[in-house]
Length: 300
View 1 (tube, rainbow, N blue to C red):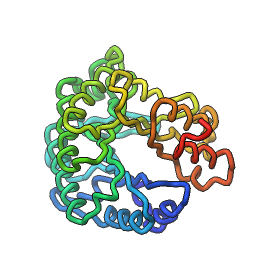
View 2: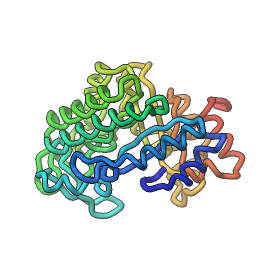
View 3: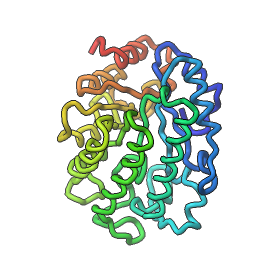
């Protein structure tokens, strides 16, 4: 579910018999509109929908440039600007102390609220998107963030340790997804992605056995990001998101069928799949077979 999706839309997909739950994406800025002041209405509504539907909810709190609380700037959070396929973006320096500490405080408040409202039983998983949503730092190349800020591996690693610790403390017993990076963290770093991810996940697994791998780039050819998890223990849980909707894929990002993608993931050990909305409601029998395969492994 995209940030801002209505409860009606949420109910539509939560009611489908071919889904077990909803991946709910919400902006940090919507949940904490001013520093230390929270608005949990959208989250509570989502929990109410999945409870009525007897489904589960995975929570992704999006901290990106569009969802970053405006009140962070006046607190002195350092930012940098880069260009991606969507245009010019401004994001916090991932290891900025104020940014990381404010998110840690947010996670603590989030956990307390979910506990107080009795909705912990509805949580399937959570994801940790801070200090950077998919770990690889877009806009970092040859040891420099755009604007001349020097990349600091140890500070970046410490920032991950801080937010993972916050989630493990606030949500004990709930699966915590940590997104695998590309082969690099800062382009030109000698393909440090796998080693950095191993460092992050070793710490996460020392805190909670529920730390899990997540990769949001599943195609019919497999997952490039999942390759970075190759040095982790074999029993570590794996979750995948398809790179795009197979039903609405004009540039062929899927590079094959949805069944091929799902089976690549299943055979790699994944047992959790996030499938896009157009595929869930597709009338294509092959697409529905793929979704059934994601749930059961049959035909793979």
